[in-house]
Amino acid sequence: MLLKANALKGFKLDCLDGEIGSVREFYFDDQHWTIRYLVADTGGWLNGRMVLISPYALVGAVKEAEAIAVNLTRQQIQDSPSWDSDKPVSRQFEVDYHGYYGWPMYWGGPLMWGAYPYLVRDPENWSAPEETEHSWDPHLRSTDAVTGHDIQATDGEIGHVVDFIIDDENWAIRYLVVDTGHWWPGKKVLVSPVWIERVSWSEMKVFVKMSREAVKASPEYTDEALVTREYESGLFRHYGSDGYWSHENERV
Image (cartoon, rainbow, N blue to C red; front, side, top):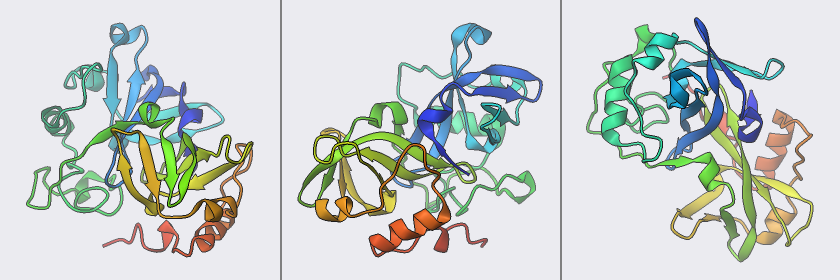
């Protein structure tokens, strides 16, 4: 299911033995554009401590109930490695965190989920959680912090990031929602990470491979409309590329 990151803010988090708080934001890596952690605001529980929840523990979102089920107990979360929310997520924290839960290290291989092209939820199919020669150095970004970054086409600016559309099966970011602002008032468009050429985090700019005119002619996106497979197919056809679903999630 495709979900908007902003719409998930405030969703309650239901553990195996009770509620732990609500969704605050997400951290994603800038190589695979995949959510690595949900940031949970624990409110009165744990004295308001912010905790990170990996997609390995996220069962799925229920929009009607405005809730996300978490396959952990409150005690497991309370005893997990402590994270200082005022500092970036360090590699040492991630090693300790994944080691504590026994989850595979997503950076331990070249694919979206390390050794796997998809999120493997069954522990019996996990390999040992250790780094390999194929490991890479993730740089985690906050969805809140990246919101507002300018989008640069090949011939000029086209707008800025206002939201992210997330696939809750693999927790991949499928699209950046771009408000075209003063250039094309009132219109929003979707940009797939597939079409991103590079990102200048210091300049707060995302450079894409298409022209302003190509973006202007792309299928319009509205907050009220559902992103259906028919809409996605038309969007990818417009830009002359295959949809992510045509080559991703192959069970190997």
